[in-house]
Image (cartoon, rainbow, N blue to C red; front, top):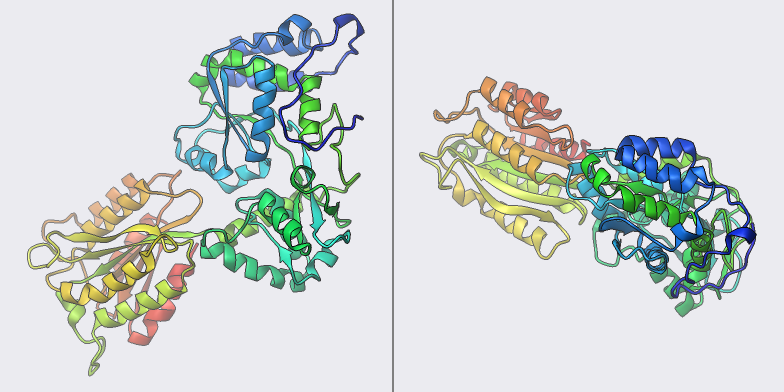
Length: 537
C-alpha cells in the first residue's frame, strides 16, 4: 500500500489501463458473496454481468475498462466525494451515470417515506442509516469506496494529539453531528467524561436553535481557523488535506471515528433490473486502480493506493458499538419536534378556570401554550389549529388551520403563533368538535410527516365531543388506526383542561396512536402537564 498523491481536488487523472501482460493480478474487492447479494437485488442479469466482469477473470479486462455500458442512472454522493466520483466516471466514459452532490438528509427523508430516490447513494458514512427506518432496505454494493479518519486540526500552529487537549480549549469549533459525521468524533469523546459532556451542551443548544450558520461545515470551520490563526476543530482527514493542509493535524490518541463512504443501491427492485448494466459498470470502474489513485489524490484513503498526501499517519478506530450508541443518543437528544397544537375554543373554554377564578380556561391554556412555545428551540416546527362545533362556532367549520406547521426559526413563525394564540379569545363559541378535529389533525400530521423529527398532535380540550354529526369514539379509534402508517409514526398527546375534560376519550385517542393523555385540573397544573407532554418522545 503506497503512493504519494497531491492534495488538490482538481480533475482526477484519466483512467489508463496498463498493458495486460505487465499488469499485476488485482484481487477484486467485490467478493463472490457481494455478487450474490447484488444478484438477489437486481436479478439474474446483474449476476451474469457482475460475475463476468469481476470474478471470472479476477480483474477488469483492458477492453472492458475502455467501455462503460448501461442506461441512464442517477448517483447521489456526499458533497466532498461528488467531484472526484464524477471525474472518475467521466474519464471512464460513464456519461450515462449522473452524479449529484447531495446532503444526507436529502436522501434519508425519501428513503424513510418511500419517495423518489437516486439509483445509487454514496454517503460519507454508513451510520446515517441508523437515523431512519428505510421503507425499502438499500443493498450494499460496496462496504467502502474509500475512507477518511476524523482528525484534530489546530489553527495556532500547535499539534493537539488528544481530545483531552481539545476540550481544554476555549475556542473549540464543532459541527452538527446530525448533518456532519465528522463532528461525531468530538461527541463520542465528550460523552466519556461528564465535564466534557457539559462543554458540548452549548453546541447542542446552538444546533437546536435552527439558526442559519449555527453549525458551519468542515470547510467553513477550517477557513475560520486559517483566518484567525487559532481554534481547534475535528474534521475528516480528507477535508483537512484538501482545504487546510498548512494547518497542524493529528489523529486523536483516544481513537477516532472513520468515515467509510459505502456504495449503496437505493433504487427499488424493478428499477434495479433496469439499470443493472450501469451498476455493473460503476462497480468495475470503482474497482480499478485508477479510481483508487484519483480518490487518494482527492484526499481519501483507499485499499489500492494507500494514504493521501498530506496525512496524519496511523490511527486507532473507536469501537463500533460505542460510536453506534453515541449516534443513537445524540439523534434522540437533537431530534426536533414537529407538531400541530389544536386548541379547543368552544364556549365552555370561556368559563372560569376554577371556582371564583377571574381567569378563564382558555386564558390559562393560552398562557401555558405561549410559555411552551417560548421554551421550544428554533428547529421545532409547530402549527396551530382551533376547533369548536360548526353550528354555533366562529370558525366556519369544526376546525380551522390558523398557522401552518413550519420551523420556529423560519421567518417570523414564532411571532405569528404568539399573535394567533393571543387572538383565540375572540374565536370562542359553540360546542366541542373533538372527534373530527382529532382525526383531521392526525391525518394532516401523517401526511406531512418528517422522518428526522418527533411528530405529534397536541390536543387541548375542556370537554367531551358534542358534535352530533361527527363519528362516535369507537369509530374515531377505528379511523385513527386505519390512518396510521408504521413508516410515519405520529402520536396524539391529549391535554384535558379541568376535570370536565373527557379523559376517557383522550386516553382512547392516545392509545390508538401510541400517545399519552393528561389532565390539568387547576390552572397551575397546565404548565407542568404541557412540559411533560412536549417532553414525550
